[in-house]
Length: 347
Ligand SMILES: O=C(O)CCC(=O)C(=O)O
Ligand SMILES: [Fe+2]
Image (cartoon, rainbow, N blue to C red; front, side):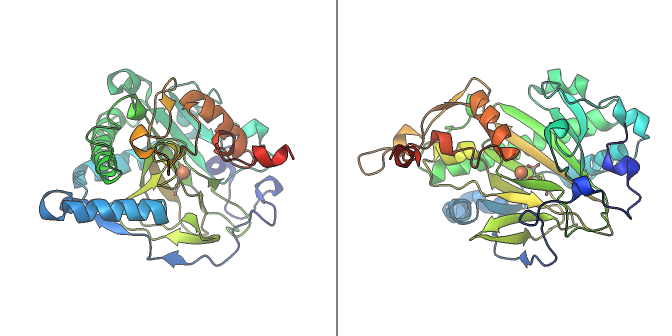
């Protein structure tokens, strides 16, 4: 089982099946941007609440991304989880391989590049651990048994991060004028965590840690740490998201773009590698249940603002998304757009 990058890489050679096409390669110079808003979530209570909501909505429209500080997730919870992630990836290969699977229905898997590794021509420079988090009391038994503290500390982490995510969704709901608790139902009841480990790479200009994609669900909450690597496509240009220790990067997923009827944007992003340091990130995804029907919120639809997306069953959407991810179709949202190019293609 030597397909895992951290197992075989000597940091000196970049095999051909990790070299992306010229158009996909990240190249050398991508500036880190300070433009993506950093929002103080502590201000979401009291006098500054309205202004904070405004900032979240504007950032979600303009960038599809923002960072949050003063977010209420206790420092010890973040530190302990980070140690647990690190300790997991430091385990002997045989231990990690116990969780190796390409069966995406498994509740906890250790995989490399992409869960559909065998279907890819070019692989991404990354090993990942992914596990479901909802309902926690059921999923937790599938999580790694080693390091021994993993379940306890990551259990606390996902509980806190989910609670913060719920607060952010509540602010978004208020900002979109959808009322209280719009997302507090099956729209947000599926959660999972992906911990990505990007080992040092001999030539970061030729490969990617994670291909360009938009996230499928409502929102993603990423602990990026201090090593840069996340980039977003803004106005046709890739820009780096500034690493801020202990801040969380929030991004809008496709389902929130649908619910907001295109008001909020799910923006393409990718992860690049670097030569010197291992980069480890934790992405927490808040998503609808598989059988949940997602559609533009009725409160946002009127004669001037007709729906621009069709209703879609979330599990079906995820299927289409996987094909888009592998480049089989261009844009996962396209089949669900009411004013889509389908009318043009009949000409
Ligand atoms: O690791 C990162 O910086 C990005 C992770 C990400 O975009 C994802 O898991 O969907
Ligand atoms: Fe993502």
